[in-house]
Length: 213
Image (cartoon, rainbow, N blue to C red; front, side, top):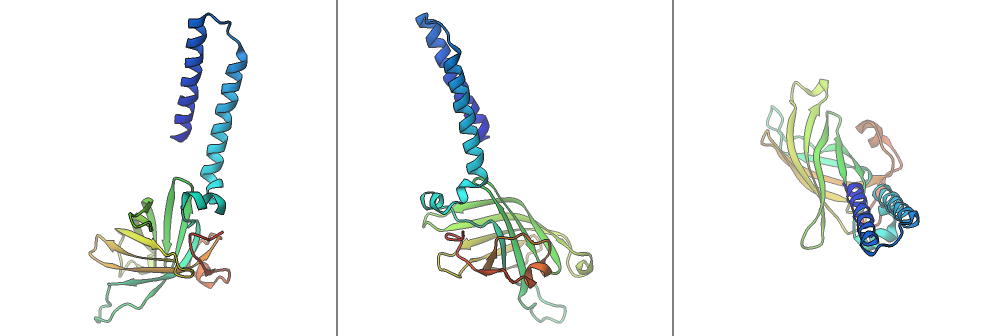
């Protein structure tokens, strides 16, 4: 969408230049068109670079205020689900993988029993200045866990801490009328394919999203 807007802007400028040249009777020269074309290409390349990587630079984020969540987060889920004998389920180790660009974000949450993927996700800034990662998800239990959990949908949100080591904290709700808390305080720049691999990794460290490099 941004690229389309940029191309439209460059096109409008070219049309205005052409109209003025025709009205004033000046001879048309290809030089201005080449300049406009080069300018449009430069704008498009810069916008693409910003979307993919420039926005992550710490100096840039000092101006935008945008937190850097891209990478893998490790923590736990506390659920309202109870066992058949009525005892509560203990905290569940969990891994959150975030893919983030300047304008988009997607989320995957791994546990030993299931994988939740976002169907829609957004990074929002509240009136008090805090940032919130909010997403709708579909949870797909692994085959060995389907006797006690079926596929379901839900909504989750994580508030981004400003204190070093506080990480991400929030809650979730599902269409099964269950709910719980999310707490993820450790971060790694790497991407892991499973909860077991990430939980066993040694490259995680306490992180603050606003200063993560």
